[in-house]
Image (cartoon, rainbow, N blue to C red; front, side, top):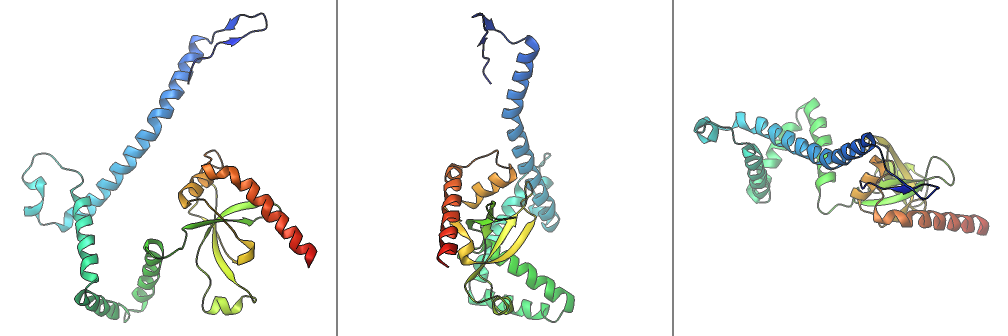
Length: 241
């Protein structure tokens, strides 16, 4: 924050008091150091958590802590990355796929574990699939009433029993996150014509939702025009009907 000397009515300059300048300096330092401190804490927490998970699985002879007097953080992250990469490499081969099928067939015989495993596996495949489009598109829908527009994440079209039970026409599923916690929200099945896809990345949409509009992405300027255009199209459609 820069110090600003505001002109008074008689032409003199208003100089902020020493206390006001200290307060401005403090908040400037907080704005600079706060994000850095939170980011560093989150990174350290992630590294320490993974290290604590992986370290008990490693033989003591392979751990550098056995030979060094200081703890080296991050070794668990490296081991986990290499292990998961090798697991993916093995799963891509015929032998690996065979072992996976054998393991899944064993889990299918366990009543409680079977349902839990399949649900978690489906969630992971949906989120981390490189070919999928779920939650990689952002849209606008009218909610909670007419003329009120909110951001949603576009998911996959309904299938199976849900698709057969819905009215005739093309439908899409969307997730409407809550502010400021986007991990909670509402899940809808809507007609495709009621969802307006917008050129916004999921990251920008999440920032906009979590900040309650304080962090405006570049595409935010066009959202109002898109909403007005969608509203005009709905009016024309209703009049033609």
